[in-house]
Length: 391
Image 1 (cartoon, rainbow, N blue to C red):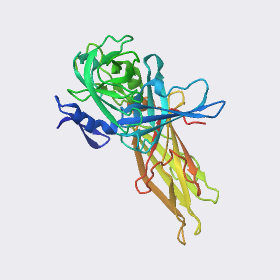
Image 2: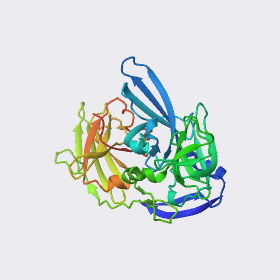
Image 3: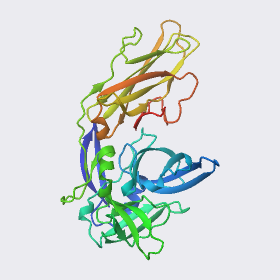
Image 4: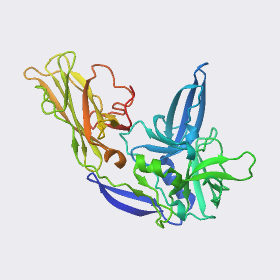
């Protein structure tokens, strides 16, 4: 059973958010939030031998933009490692893997936040609750991916809040691979903690990290405000979108046709692009292609960068690769595609003061991973990743 949680308008669309009804058991929570749990696999390469070791853990999605919270020790870089590759599968260790990009960490609290590389989708995220109102004896529910299992659900009461370093402890079992798994309250289906693990000498004693220890990561990246200690509310609150509209600067090139970026391709065709950030955190990207050849079409895509007040890149993205065929006899073929849209978290949108656009000619080379990922030439996809593009 589910009850209506809220109705809200976001960029012209009505969102209906549901959550498990109060008093429900863990089964409803497991069924509702399985697609919010992420299997995390980390491949570490030894800088001397080149040997690759694999470890795994669990995380959970905290934002529709694909932000994932987990334990820092799951993705920690070791001194003897030359590289680290992190991928995730949603809802199962057998799910298709998507690259996970590292955003930030809180080593003192053993927490890290990542982002799924394909941001063109709206992901199913958990609801963050109020850890301060969770009481000893309250039933907790969790789901993770330990050992070689495809998926496991567990539950048990909160045993206490005095585990040292601010940790809680519970009789709910925990196994290797479940580090970073979400811990829900059975009463309302909201996340109040993350699994940490057992001590080898302990009997039926598992430690969890209360979600308030992730307050700064959730606020700065996902725009989620965990309730403060004095709050009696049951839910975290989203940060408001305060951004104004920011447009890229139109190009003065004679063949720009009103776009902000224009590039002549090797055989004389043209690739054009523009982008803007709209109030409410939506990024809109326009793309145009032109060919004056009866034998050659053209392919291209658009790269964007969202800039802060110091002209530094705080997020970057790529529109889908698109192509048009040769023109018919007569005038040049000029195709202007409908805009693509993607939502960025409020903390990112609220910092944006400028938009930089680059047009790319693709030729016959497919766009690299993350550019037009899962692209559909009829509807388009658009990725926007937090941080600066790798050089």
